[in-house]
Length: 351
Image 1 (tube, rainbow, N blue to C red):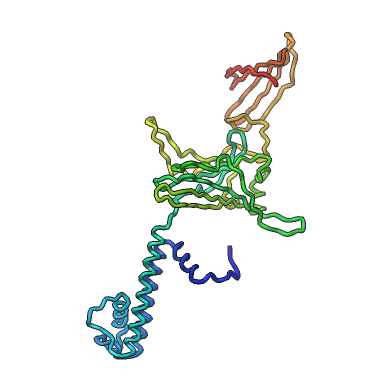
Image 2: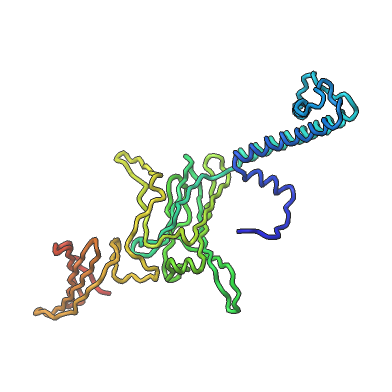
């Protein structure tokens, strides 16, 4: 995003700009500013020959080191101002040093004590079935070895829309989550949004996400368990980062002694999953099993007055054959077979 014509924020924006800089850039900027100021004063000293007693004539290097000693109020006695012009420049140099050192110290303390959550978001968001329902999922992990208390997460969908008058605008839609809060966030958290008929994602596919420039924005807030400060983390997913018909690899492992291990090497890993239509149709699926093709045989009467039907569900990884028997008194039995081997017989009552 490119901002054009943004009003100037003044010196306070410079302060916030220093706080958000990486530590390497922050330190290089402070050292560079310090050296640049001393070089400027060295040039002022060099403009008047003889303004510094003990300095070599025409030596910019001696004037530079004399400015550093003056700004830091470290005087060794070998060089000192010799003229009125030299005293004036020294006075300005000292005032600059008195102002610069506390400002730099304050910036370093503010940056060092700035509460920041070390939360890692998965590289992609995926859409796959969870408990038989198409679900949008991504996961987060608390990298720091502490807890985030009363963690809350909010997920927003941004996409292009058009009004009845033909005006295009960026629409923001909040997505309801299966669980949007956690009393303490210590390890990993899979954030899930069920795609039902009320979901803005209902009926959408990869092409729809690209055409509408869909984008997901996730914001996590909570209280740092160590410093008791409010921390937050945010992340965005572009349309290309949303993988349909994919699922996450498992990263948690529970050992026999109850220890929970998390494998960060597989945190971003995904695997293809069976086709998952976001239209919400659950036909041809069984809870906990992949979607399947359905074959249904018509009911046929039997000698004892009951009627029977046969339902065959199959996909590349499994085959399920069912025999439905309608009995008198409105009661029936469901007989399940997997690969022609009886699996279970379940009695059920009709409403």
